[in-house]
Length: 107
Length: 455
Image (cartoon, rainbow over all chains, first blue to last red):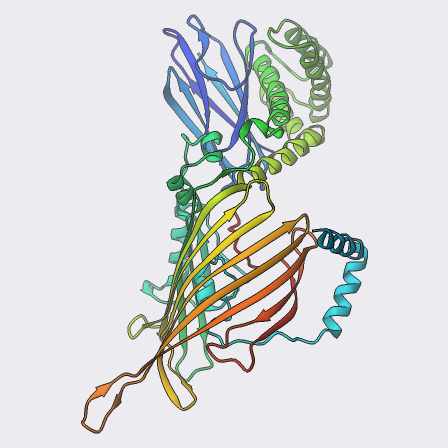
């Protein structure tokens, strides 16, 4: 399994709602632990992260598996309040292989 | 039906894998080749389906090495590397490339649900492929390089056989994928937010272990099973930290990466991979109507020079097909046009060019590994002879049109994913030039070529 690590620096002002989008027709599921200690798993869509996060890093783990018969390319997009912050992509090592995207959101 | 079922049972009992090799060896050695050879024009056009790589089909080649670039940069690199020599454009002698333009780009907005249920135009985009091949012929007086270019796609008007909600593997996959994601989130979150001053000593490792257990215990929204799973993985992680002799936060991170790439995660990944394969099969298992379209062109270049070339062959294929939802039947139509500019002599006449137009149908009946196929193809062939001048000095080109048909039946047995055994009997085309028209042949397909575009 491939592991792709990235770090994003984010602003703490206002409510931050997180969405993880899986592209290229692949299947993906995420997991993250909020500052409150709440675990969020599965599809992450407009998940409130809290408005007073500071000096805290949220680790978002997204497992993507290749099910697309046309390509082994995978990508995930990190959206805050429906605005795409960044998109990360890589190719699985084999057909029907997996990639773990570990994205650190620094507040 | 009963007779076919019995035949299938007998066939299946005979052709188990242990006996198969022995049967193949005997058949290969002792069975005479009864099927009739056909001329080069039409040799690779036997299958009614539009070819998966039309460029290779029109060249009549099955290349052993095919470049399959995954990005436009790779396509550019491959073409520049092979078609340019010291700044000059040249033709390579044996080159083949095949790629799918749509998938050269990333598609961040394409969800799995959209891939599973595409519109007709989306399916045409997803299935669009481009092929290009060259082949050198040094046997002629002037060295000739042939260039084949082809395009293929499928317009899918049907739907997946299973609706998304019935794809059970999705639920199992989600569970396993979330488990691995939870391990990463928990441990990395602890390292970044809670762990301070780790120095690799026994006390530090003990503190790390205890801290992680408390972190799990105080987490919300985790079931008891989730917590038990995470606790067991913390033990694996601590063991990895000890063996890797991590001495700081970076070392702790590396130990986690090593754990998630190691043996402990293998069984979970194998399950996910197995389910992914099943989901991929569900994506490809579609019923209803679809239309395969392919185009190809062949150009001849003398001495590998770009000037003085000519188009020697062109082809167009249309394969409408229908797969029934519950009956194991597939209907296929054949619309095929092939044009050959190659001059040749037939019965004392010099043929300037030949054009074949094929129209036909095929029916496939499949039960498990056994299939029964029947096809009927009508062919109209037009040949234009070289210009002749009559006694009055007028020049004209005689044209002749002949019709023919092909009808055959095939019984096939799919031994495994890559090997199939089939027997065909029927009447082949007499056109273009044949010594006889009976088809009777035993074939073994070892999974080379075929119409599936591999990723």
